[in-house]
Amino acid sequence: MVSSQNVLRTPRGESFFKNEVRNFPKQYRNEVGTLSRFKLPIFFLEKTESRRMRGFKSGKFANTIFVFSFLGFVFPLSWVYPEVIPFEPHFVTEEKKSGPSFDEEKSPIFQEGQTQTEVGANPIPSFSGKIIDWDVEKLTEYAVSNNPLYLAEKQNMRIERGKVITASLYRNPTIQLQQQFIGVPGGGGSSGPQILGANGSQGGHMEVAPALYQDLDVYGVVSLRSKVAKKSFEAVLGEFDNFDRLFRLRLRQNYWAYIFLTNLVDYNKEFYENYSDLLELTKFRVEKGDISPLEYERLELERIQVEKFYRDALVRRQFVEKELRILSGIREAEGVFAFKTEMRFKSLEDLGLRLREITTVNRPDIAALEERVKEKKLNIDLQRREALGYVQVGGEWRIKGNEHYAGVFATVPLPLNDRGQGKVLSAKEEHKKFELALEAKKGKSTKRLRLPRRNFLRERIFLQSTKESICYRKTNSWSKNPG
Image 1 (spheres, one colour):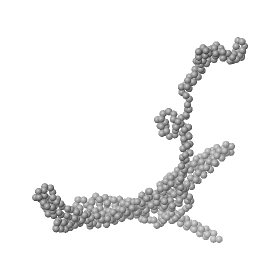
Image 2 (cartoon, helix red, strand yellow):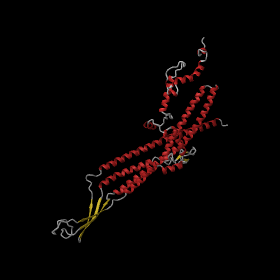
Image 3 (spheres, rainbow, N blue to C red):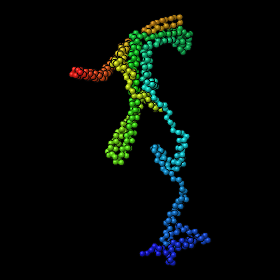
Image 4 (tube, one colour):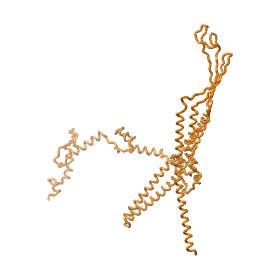
């Protein structure tokens, strides 16, 4: 076997590496040259092989190092910044428009420092809203005073009040002043128009005629129109009472629903946390082999169901909170709901609802419809009278020099063509429409009351029969066992 030590030895028996290290400086001076010979060959570009440097090919390695050195001299080294992928899409668009050019202010290092400075200078604004822990009475009082929906509905009464005032007013009188001053030119030689009564004019003195006109309500249009406006005002009052009733009812419903869902959320959250702890303990017992893995899977499914209940309660509370904020007029920036009222039973009398006193006829929505029916019935006669018009009475006084004339006249319209046929027909149909609406409303309300009444009577009869049966059993048992 040939040893590697024998192969790497010179003919003299010396080691190859020792010989090369000792002869390398001489070889470098002889082959590269000195400054006295004015020769500066580049050792790294030499591709020839020396006989003494066997197996040492430095040409390719030297060329590679030279190329990288030249590129480093032409293109100096600079910091390489990583590309940051933003979350917002508009940042990507701005980066595409700006191009790949480097900007120190846009670098991540600069942005990080600037962000830290901004956070230190401008801290995150904390929520400064107050805690709203009112009861239902205080919340209702605030809602009816500040809710725009409630206040807008309340304005309808003032609008109708203005219509009542307008309907009760008579027509204004009319004053007319007439003066005749254009005459025919006389023989004075002037060719232009002359004023009556002046020299050289014909017709005598200037004539002045003041007059006064007044429309008289002979057919009672104003009084009947005032009655129609008053009925409309009473109908609007009934509609507002119905709106106020429904508004307060919805506000109370959402208030108690929010409290109930808040308690339900807290209950489900606590239940979910307990299930999570129980699941961790069950997992530990399964790993130890105390119980079956099926028990762990069963508890995991139950925890998922509890989590679903918890999230559903959160979603329902958000919907109720939105409705409650709309009804109360309280925005999120104005306060946080944290009602402390307990869920206790309250009777209808405590809530202000007296169902025994409220009948179908006395309901505000039905009362408003009844007033509308009366209004439309009076409106039919009003349209007929308005077609007859007003009788106009006037007086005139004419003055012409020393002559004075006075006259009285009356103007009566003749309804031959337009007698208000279309308006009367529309009023009749509108009256019929509201009559049908009133009948439908009463029928709907009666049906709603009949079903609970039937259930109440059925339960009452059942309780009475049960009571009689119990009394009979007691009596029968006492007769059988008198002692």
